[in-house]
Image (cartoon, rainbow, N blue to C red; front, side, top):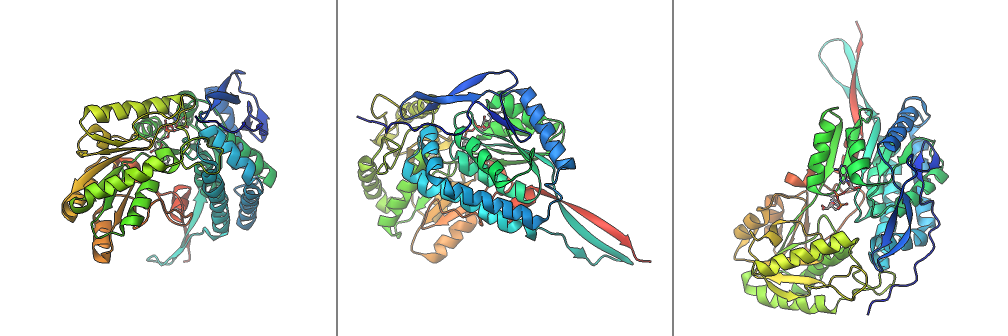
Length: 489
Ligand code: NAD
């Protein structure tokens, strides 16, 4: 029986959007309900934005960019402000963690130890970059002095998903603001609360009005309006690959810059010479962290033939023992799927796996009768061309596949339209590095999984998107280069 801890009162301003420095209702006055996925109950109501609200937000962002203090401010002062945001996030860690867990369904231990601290870390990191973004002098032919200016792109639309709501906002806002852009942010309709609270904290830190605007509501209306808007200079998107494609199409008419962080079907390759205990631990964390609702989830588990059966059996034993349930219980290891839709989608894929003839080794069903909980699930004897091995399930479901040698592992691992992440587990350092080179993915982990740092780039190969977030690479997404020529004759 799953019992969720009593939900906490929400202190933020739900039902309002942030436009031009003010918390306002949607133009239509409409709202929608946000649900606690652990109970299926309504937490609160959120303003339902539409095209007119996006127009107002873009206008406010344009005004702040063209005439406001933000892009002209001393870069070090912009950095200081971002550092204040980071401090405020840490000061409000507990409130943000509880809010994130209630809205998303993830375990409170993850919100407390990953989502919120990493959000602060991202703002601290980009606070440090603000005054280190500069151009270069170039030794051109002729009697000229040529130099470059690295300038902000302008008004940026940012559209983020529901799996790490606060952290995805930080990945996008940190670099965009450090570079002096102004922003219209659109959180997922499933998880709006922490983004609104972050908006409050950012305003409390002293951000000038209009620099950050938040429009809440559905992707089909708010997201599309933002991607199509004639007066945004860039759209940055994280979400499903199919949505990314429609965003790129919508952005084409105005040729705005586009960066896309999309889905994945990451190969997690375990060689027989690996440290088996840590490979099992890492593989469990790789797939079940955040209920498998991770773009880089280790959803295809390739195990070398010699150890395959024993490895999968041990993994299933641990998976069966995982504590799934009340996300607000600090001992919980896996929480609820974010929504009824996502819950249904994952259960549908489990049925597909059974029909395709994969062997259900553990899990494969919902847990309890209330809330959107699914047991950690392992399918064995999976063929790489089965639907469950090709499509992103975005849930706690892993497909185990056997391989005989490194060539087969790499070939099959790369046999996917995605290219977000990959991992290899081996004690052979040469094999590990050779595999890392041959895997077509934006991140390769060796003897670890889900290692992240604000300083290290993250993004996709192939249909997992383009552009790199985090690290100095993200600054490329939010700046453009101007070449200035001075005649010295
Ligand atoms: P989604 O594509 O359904 O939605 C993402 C965002 O886009 C939401 O804010 C949504 O409202 C909006 N949106 C939906 N339709 C839109 C449209 N037609 N035009 C404009 N905006 C629209 O994705 P999701 O279900 O929220 O998130 C899960 C997906 O995100 C997974 O595919 C996952 O792999 C991916 N993801 C990728 C990364 C990465 O860094 N590569 C990180 C996290 C999540």
